[in-house]
Image (cartoon, rainbow, N blue to C red; front, side):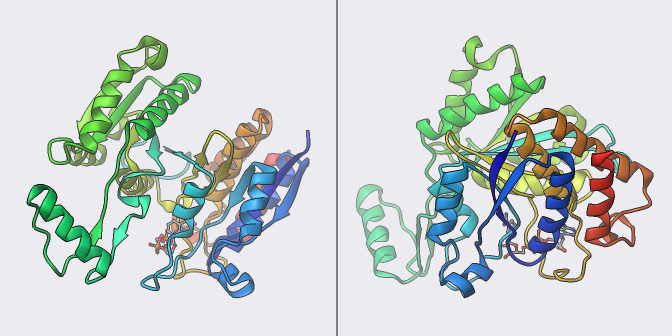
Length: 357
Ligand code: NAD
C-alpha cells in the first residue's frame, strides 16, 4: 500500500541520518511517497520561521511525519520547535523503546524498556516568566497575595501544570500500549511527596484508573519515586518494563535508558496523538559531529520501523528491525560511537541491503 509521509530532515546530523533512513525505508517498503518539509535552524534561514506553517500543514495533510533532530537556538527567546510541534499537533504521548541490541556490549544485556512520556504538560508546557519582567513581578505579587508565597525578586519562573485530563489519556495510552505489545508491567515515576498537587495528581489519577480492569487489562502496576527509580534503573534495569512518566522526567530518563543500551545513536521515538504521529530519534542535532559522516543512523532507522508499524506495515517494520540486528550482530559495519569506522551512509546502505534481502 502507498503512504504519504512528511519527511523533515532537521539540523546538524539530521540530514545525514535522514538520508540513510530514507534509503532503508525505501528498501523495506517501496510504497512511501515522501513529502519534504523543513523545520529548525535551516527553516529560519529559508522561511523566516523555525516551524513554518507549510510544515504543519504538510503533517496535517499526511497525518504521519518522520523527522530528524532540530537545533533550538539557545537564549534567543525562541521556543523549542519540538515542544511547539507536540503542542500544535497535540502529540500527547512519546514512546521510546530501549532494548539491548545484538553485538552491542552493555552491562545489563536483559534490558528491554519502553519509556512512555506525557508530552504536552508539566514544566515543558512553556508557561514561563522572565526574571525582572512586568509579568513576573505581577505573578510574584499575586502569589504573595493569594497564599503568602515569597518568590525572590530576581527569580525566573516556570510553571508545572499537570491536569486530570492530560493524565487520564496518557495513563490509558500506556495500558493500551502495554497490552497490545505484550508487556507485563507499567511503572509510574513521580515525586508526589514534594509536588503534591502536580505529581500527586498524576499518581492519584494513575491509581484510580489502574484499579479498573477494563483499563489496566491485567497488566501489573507499580509506582515509585523518581529518584529511587533512577537509582534502580542504573542498578537493575531488567526489573522494569514500561515506564510511565510526566514530561520532564520522561525526557531525562529516556536519555538514561539510551545510555543503558549503548547510547543515543540507538534509541528511536514516536510522538503520538489522536490525529497525527511524528516519528523521530531521541537524540539531538549533535553539532559536535555534524557534517562528517560520523552519526549513527540507527536511532532514526528504528524510528522509521516504528512508523511502518503505525502505518500497519508490520512485515516491513519487522524487516527493518531484523536488518538492524543483522548488521549490528555481524559487527563489520558500524559508526564510531559503537567502536567502528564506518560512515553514516555505509551503515544505511548495509541495513538497506539486509532489509531488502
Ligand atoms: P545531542 O543528542 O545532539 O548530543 C549529545 C551527545 O550524543 C553528543 O556528544 C553527540 O555527538 C552524541 N550523539 C547524538 N546523536 C548521535 C548519533 N546519532 N550518533 C552518534 N552520536 C550521537 O544533544 P545536545 O548536544 O544536548 O543537543 C544538541 C542540539 O539538539 C540542541 O540544539 C538541542 O536543543 C537539540 N535537540 C533536539 C532534539 C530533537 O529534535 N528531538 C532532541 C534533543 C536535543
